[in-house]
Amino acid sequence: MAGAVEIKTASPNVTRRNFDPTAVVPEPLPPVVTAANGEDAGVDKLDKESREIVLGKNVHTTCFAVTEPEANDEFTGDKEAYMAGVLARYRKSLMERTKHHLGYPYNLDFDYGALAQLQHFSINNLGDPFIESNYGVHSRQFEVGVLDWFARLWEIEKNDYWGYITNCGTEGNLHGILVGREVFPDGILYASRESHYSVFKAARMYRMECVKVDTLISGEIDCADFRAKLLANKGKPAIINVNIGTTVKGAVDDLDLVIQTLEGCGFSRDRFYIHCDGALFGLMMPFVKRAPKVSFKKPIGSVSVSGHKFVGCPMPCGVQITRMEHVNALSSNVEYLASRDATIMGSRNGHAPIFLWYTLNRKGYNGFAKEVQKCLRNAHYLKDQLRAAGIGAMLNELSSTVVFERPRDEDFVRRWQLACEGNIAHVVVMPSVSIEKLDVFLNELVKNRSTWYQEQQPPCIAADIGKENCACPLHK
Image (cartoon, rainbow, N blue to C red; front, top):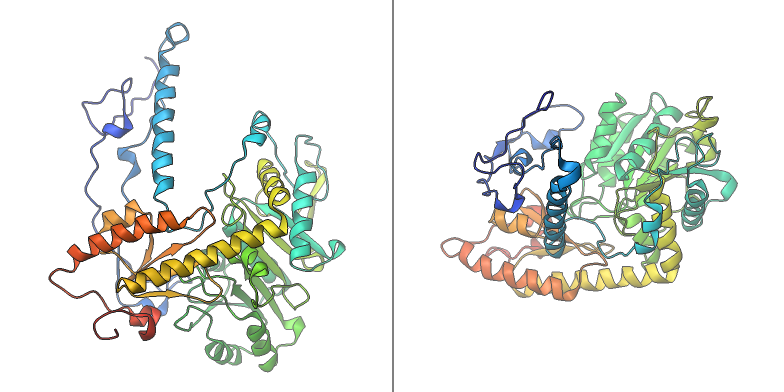
């Protein structure tokens, strides 16, 4: 066909018309890649020793190609039938992968069937959430309702905050740190070494000086090291990323101690800006008894959370709240929109606010409180069962992230979609993770582990989770 682009399949024996993604022979695991010893803002100076990172498989071998319809497709319906088959098989694979998902903080238990009626509309909230644009197909009324809910949660008055629903948690961090940089153009960004990679991405994007702060064995920021690094840079304002749940260990930085450290080092409140990265636990913490409060009654500048994690949303999204007084440095009038804009993205998904609004209304504070307690209970169950099986495990007090020794078999890691770093892996216990699912995982892990260590001892992970949590022969 003239003008058509031919894209070869992974296997020469599979034609496009009958392409079955399940028939592709799985390729062997990719080679181990050694991390480079760079010195930029995204590379840890403590990580100078090379470490091995196993990358995922090349998706080009199993991608679904886009092909031109045949001339008579309109009458035969072959293309429609082909696409229906691909989608049916894809749905089946999604169901299977969802059944064996444990390593990433996504709540997969949701039902938004009532919102299917809105999928026929191109809903776009481009520009400022609080000022309508000339584009009328938007969901600002839902977005502002959601923002008001989070403002109440984090104790800031309607007239004192500004925020928007982002496209993901990373965008929330990018925006929060950008606001800090605009408030203090010569400020230094301080973040613990266990902060999310998006924080260091922000430092690179904004060309900010970035100082990495050591952490305790729990993953929490080490305020003694923070103090030393603040004193070494007293001449410049401080922009601080505070983790409300670190990526790997689920550690919560002590916000009150961070503020005390800043003030103890002579930083008055007009010389520091705090962004709280609450991607997962920012929504769980308010419902945990004895947990320290994340509140705008404290001298913080912004808070962000992910909407597709604990809340459960079928598309990535997030919420970013900052103080109105800070956002003016970013705002500009856009005639094309007949609105203002202080967001990072231009077009913004207008469906996401509706999904969030729907869930917040259905569950409310009491519903979320029950789900938080369920997650914490199940996380303790998993930790206790791992230890009973002789497997080292750690669970931070305010967390539902259970850290344990990394499985030796990468196929097992991929089957359960575990997130790994060095010698450790973790399971993030979400509302969609039941005791029954954890039991299946535990049984498979214990069974496989007995073959992995027939001729050698399990690894020591005391350096990662502490001697008291390690179950190696030396620390039992």
